[in-house]
Image (cartoon, rainbow, N blue to C red; front, side, top):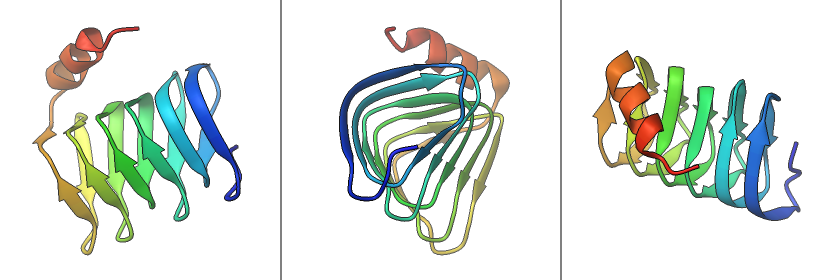
Length: 112
């Protein structure tokens, strides 16, 4: 968990769920879920099993199972996932690709 008054610069890899309520600059690659809370601000790519965004993301979202943009979400970048949910009021400036093949291909193109 990254608190609302915290800032992290770097990369996170692992098999844990991540909750971001502060500022994160870098790359996130985890085998579980990533939640960007209402006060969360991510500048960088997110690769996870599932991704939920209530805050801001400036980067690519690659979800193996599901990506959800809540009403308060502001995303600048592409979203790749087999299932994508975009709530009314969410802002997305970018593209959406909905298939397992697209998410897997995008994940393999992302340098580790």
